[in-house]
Image 1 (cartoon, rainbow over the protein chains, first blue to last red):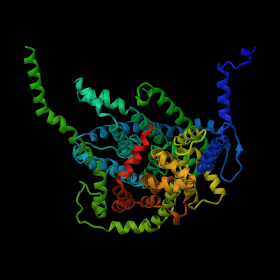
Image 2 (spheres, rainbow over the protein chains, first blue to last red; image 1 turned 90 degrees about the vertical axis):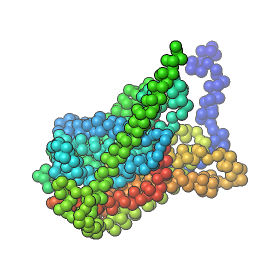
Image 3 (tube, chains in turn blue, brown; image 1 turned 90 degrees about the horizontal axis):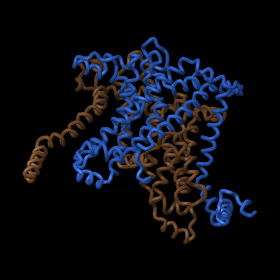
Length: 331
Length: 299
């Protein structure tokens, strides 16, 4: 009888009762600590509630409504989401943004890894200078970087095409050519990935020398050491950079706004997303709807779709990387 | 027999070390130099253009050394972008944000690092999770709240969240809490326990022991926040529509409204808004590197 009345999950009744008590009933010291702890994190608790939890839920609600600012939201069910599928600019902006997430972000993460590997040398003379050079593009304001690249990639007077023409290459129209515009952004992304390089350098410096020594004893050359020691050891940093790079590419805004605005001036194209919306990023489309046309319900639907997309993409990346990323603590 | 083979192969290897080895060792440096030159060229071009006359800035073939050399673009850009006003507005935004982040995030980080309470790891995971939340999701409801409060065209929507450890962005609240917590975890517990035995309150311990020991980390957080706000474009774009409230990053837009872009002026303006950050970087290089490296630690 007693055996039957026991909960099946706890073979040892004494342990279960104790753990339950300790979970719910705190000693006086524990209660005091809990109070003090909550007191210290209370600024965050208030901020989290007011600036994260409430707005996140509110925007989910707004996404099911027709809503202009300072009006009462009107429930429209899934209308906004249905509208998305029929909005050509939505598809355009999604395509443009995927170009940055699938090509721009991985490419800049890869180039940054290459540079970090070159920088991570033992007989380092003047490495600090090189590090500064590669980090500097990240230091300058995004707006300044964007304006600079509008100039550099100007089809006729820009430095890049002028240099290309010296070698006999007729450079593309870059931001002024819808089929090339996004490659200009990709260049800018690669150039300004200084923070990624620094993260790699930190990871590379954490690789124990003993591993290289052991590999050398086994007769490993530089390539083998790179392939079988360095890359596996920094694989968590690669994954981290890939995920954060992808997330920020999904939200790409400032540079696209500045460049899109910049190239539209002096042309007949009045859109904010560059020539034929070739630079209309998802974040830009969201901004246009929310704050230029004040279609805030629709913009909220865009925002929630973005959140879900980022979540799915992150989970997929984590799944795919499983078994390919080496975590020391798991060993 | 075998000894001969060994000595032969050893000889071949040492020969490779001599010639090919030199190339092998020199190649990365060579590639680095080329890459560094490529990465630096935009800056060189920016400076060179800012010192040119308008016709020379678009000359073909391009001219590297300005001739005649003129500084005219700087005062022109300075005036046109209303630099002083933009600078003042940027400071009004960025300095309180840095202070607010340092104060609120060190309190919160202390609560996560140095007080043992039930559930703190779970709650800390939530803090980290907010790093992943795209700011666009909260944008519209926040705008609505701030509009209802009458905070549009004030600095409040941008500054108040920093005092609640909740500023968005890469150097926002969650990131700063994370960074400070990492640092606080390294502080010897004996020091805290001794102070507790002496009857010191937790606030007293934070103020008199933990904070003084964490000055480097606090400076890092203050600097990264300041720079984040200096660079911020989206926030001011939404909340500081009034021309008199424009920050420097917004004031760059003025150069794109002209019919023909005045490249020397535009480049001069870019230099003017980038220079303070570059100066801070050179003054506090280590802090930057440490802060950024810490970001990758959890990866």
